[in-house]
Image: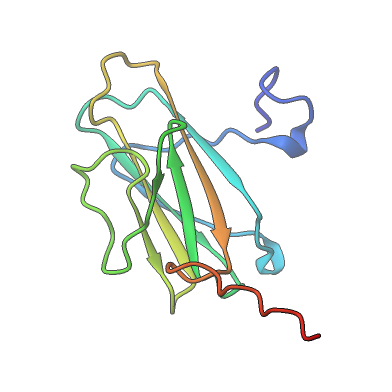
Amino acid sequence: PYRHNKWHDPKDGWAVPLAVGGFYEVAWPAAVDFTALTLEATGLQPGEHAYVRFKHSASWGHWKVVAGGGAVKTPSVSGVPGAGLSTGAAYHDVEGRSLTVLLSGLGQEAAMVTQTVTLTPDPCPRSGCPAPEAASS
């Protein structure tokens, strides 16, 4: 359902209940990709967690994951993060074209604190985009 009074228009956001300890797959019809996505999790207690996996159709070089407005986290390419890590820990399955993000209650001091994670795909490799070629004279 649309989350009333949070966003100005239903197309701007949706609220979905997640059971702790669960693993959720998210995909859009016709494998449409997104250019940026923000997740908000409220109510996670210490020791509680949930995983959200996003499928994508484009061959993204890597993902930028920012938790709580902090530093950019680089998703692992070796496996799903353990439940004992903090929110924003992620795994990018390059061949399977998916990004799995951990939402975690680790370090939460109050039950109703909202955690925010922003995901942005990047077509450049982890090492960065190649320098543009100099124009020929």
